[in-house]
Length: 254
Image (tube, rainbow, N blue to C red; front, side, top):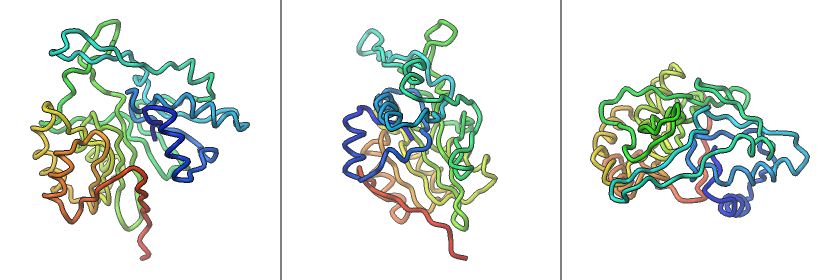
């Protein structure tokens, strides 16, 4: 899932973790932000340079949108790199674009597709804008998706990229898709960093406590304040993530 902010970072970490990238069968993109795809082209070239004719790339069609950040204090939009479908195909990707959930890994894992927005407090990023139908508008982040895995006897493992749709929205939608209430683990970016999102940290924690996952693992864009608050308020469920941490989720024996 996702391909880092630089190829150097991606390949270096894979080497340190002794992860054989030649064994990759598919790639899933959580959303079209450069810190999640800038290593993708080189990764595809590396994989397909080993004799593979192409590798499935699962993503939402709006992951290719032009985007920029329009920060009021800056006074003008700051452009962001965009995905180029032609470049990805030339590098060996076989894009599988879907707005709806898609099974991968033989049906063991599902993408969420577009996440339903049901919470009152999880709002879009006001500085983020996307070009839709020729106009720059507040980015709806319809391309934001997570992964859901149902572990026998344990419950759901929900993995987010940035959770621009809201981590609670993402978990609740994963539960709806899987037809299950029990959540084993929630991990990934919770997007609670910075003054725009810090006011909803408590609401997010309150809702996560209601969901009662066995483990909660905020990463990436969750922010230092949110990570510490989760540690304080959900100490039995909280796990501190670091680069290189490996998680093994196994089925219950009975």
